[in-house]
Length: 252
Length: 314
Image (cartoon, rainbow over all chains, first blue to last red; front, side, top):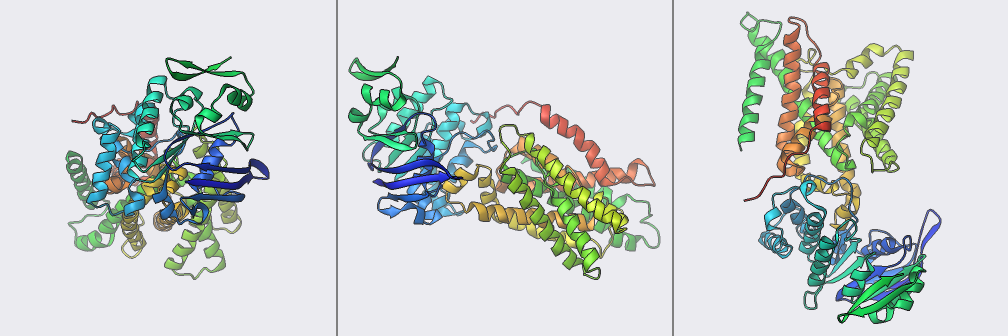
């Protein structure tokens, strides 16, 4: 379980996050949603330990993340940052192999190689092994980065807007894979910052709603992803209806 | 493997040419002496300087995640010169090794200054960073020139500002062998340097000591550049062109490509030096000048040539 207690973050005197207390269950997929500038990515980075909060605590499975050693942290959680413009010309095989770095620190053994091979299979990257990142489509690239995180074999995976800039086909493909990777029994929970409410409604098991740097609401989708809740969160009329047994989001 | 055979052959031909070509006559009475005291050192110096600068370029490019940057565009050689000038003025009797250390520390400080500056440069347009580096290096260079001018040290300064190998003799270039050691060190930390190119967030989330790795990389760059500036002078563009050519061809995995980057850098500089000896026989054109001319053409190609078609697997 991730437990956030009275978390605050200020950068250059500007308050980004204010007194956030929440918990994230240790299985399934948690969506972090909210309007632009609500502090979603900042919260994710505080969870990851890469950003040190100004106040409050983040404890992951009972350990204080800010006090964790770099290597221990990298064995506890994998982070997928937003897409960067400059990508190295690394092959998919090389990239995924770097996922094992926190475990072998430069000396991979057979177990590491086996896990890398498995991660490549799990994300259907066999045909792209020798391709360089800069020659891949957006969806393929995201799959490669997720495979790297998968190979990192951490109980937690944090993703910052992995669906942005993907067309619906790739977005739903990536989302389905994330659901697969966080299925009960995999020993892994996934936290995703996302804008796509339709995806959140479809796939999230738990939801954190942020608004203007504060926790607006958190809980299971039945309590958080309601028409009234989303309308208040985004200050715009939003309805959640059911179509063929599935919830759908309608924005007025 | 074919690439390696071709590279090895080309390098062998260049070395033979460099050893054989020169104003002096090797078959004369002092031929053996000439060979050992001048031709050999000169050939080794060109190979080492070229290899070092190419590796330094690759490290800088990965560190700032920008392919258009090289040590000559981060104020590194200018800072090294500032250090050398300071030593010459304050403690003129300092031995070469001492001057080299001061130059390295100054180069490191100057490069770190550029990195601090780079943190504030937006990354969307990759051309912005090298332009800022150009201005930064220009400002440092003007300051160095001003000091050199007012202290009557312009002649010394000009020996650092244009890389050429005609003055390389046994006993005056050995510092460059440091580069061989630094290349080995770089090989040992090659994976970490490659991880820098994934960006700070990804590298740190993989458990990399980002700052420590960055610092190690910059120390290697600073020492290489200082060694080259002290012994043969600045060779612009080597660190830009060579890593870019190798990266285009073989990608960015530093561990896999380090030998090729070093070989290509050494070969390119040696080729420039051999050409410079031949074009206006028996006079010489500095290798730095030859490389800059050839490099400008290659650079335009790098900027405008379409990316390599993806290789299909299996």
